[in-house]
Image (cartoon, rainbow, N blue to C red; front, side):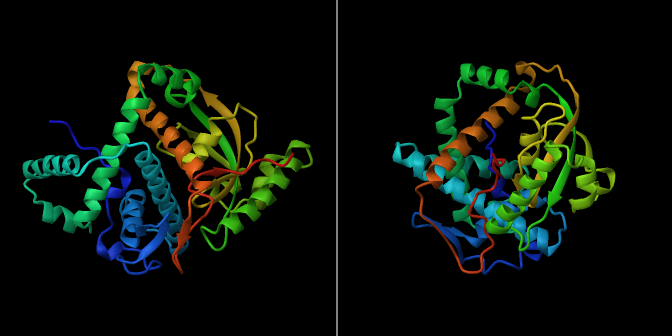
Length: 322
């Protein structure tokens, strides 16, 4: 039996872990071209990021903003695909739901128990299923073997097991998730980058002086890390676009703004046949991001009063000053 794959938003926080900075779960967090994104959807998406970890209120608010941004992008992509005739039917959703119920039966668990354990409603679960089915239909058209081979060749270091060593200078916005605050910090880091490039100050000294991350004490060194699974995705993506010795432009992640300097590299040797699923997932994510970025230019996005949000989106790289 084919396993149903859920996007990260399916997993939800237990009621005791739900965010205190959001309104009631049935309230709207935002609307996208008139379509409502509920607070409970934001909470479910945040749960997948947290994996039951305890975090402080400052970090939670920033991650709420990032979770909402991702849901906005998903809705924008959903609407774009629907405009081209790609959308899972009610019958397909019901079939997927029936398969999922059978999977739960094997685990000796009812659907009601699953929904209760994950603080989900049936409607929200169906929304997740419809999205995944719709997106998979699009990927079947766009990601054939030839596209995967091209993507692997272009981004080999991301998948062949290469590890990079890097240092960072990190600044945290206040309030968290605030787009204007992030842009201001990005401007500060862009100016600092210019001084580093001109030789007026070393990256290591600048990190000790300006960075608010624990790595500041070691000149910003964060050690070696692979492309996925250790650092925030936007951070790792920016780092793997650099060669040893290069410094990134300011990179925005859900938690703040970073300057990244790659200081070392351990080459990998894996081939496409060994990492095909990882390559497909990354190519799919790039495709998703490209569609969402285009749709954000014309989409009407309205945020509910009091909602933590970042208008710029979940992952942004701020261009370096000329």
